[in-house]
Amino acid sequence: MHKISREEINHANTLRLGLEYIRKMPDLFGPQIMSPADLLAGIRQAEALLKDIVARPELRAQLERLLGLERQFDGVHMNTAVEIKEDSLKKLFENLGRDERNHTEAINEILSVL
Image (cartoon, rainbow, N blue to C red; front, top):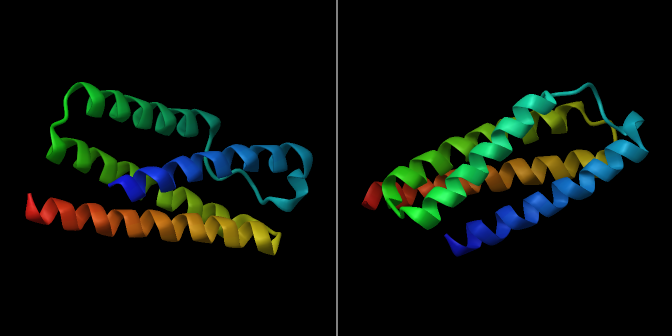
């Protein structure tokens, strides 16, 4: 779980940097995949999950919520990778999606033994 946590922090930092690319070079990206409202809703779900984990560490329920978020953002990363025109950015989003799938597998393994 610590590894997943560190990777998620890295993902968030990578995506923040990606926003700068979108602002400065929008022509490298395809059409919008996720509305700003949907993206904000996903971020709020992640923030709420973090608060709940700190306040009430009910591991199984929190892992199941985390699993849902991992799947949601895997879809976003993969759809974004398909639409991006620049190869290195495409690879970045493919890697983010791969990491999300690895997280999903790890969480499922943990859930299977709880």
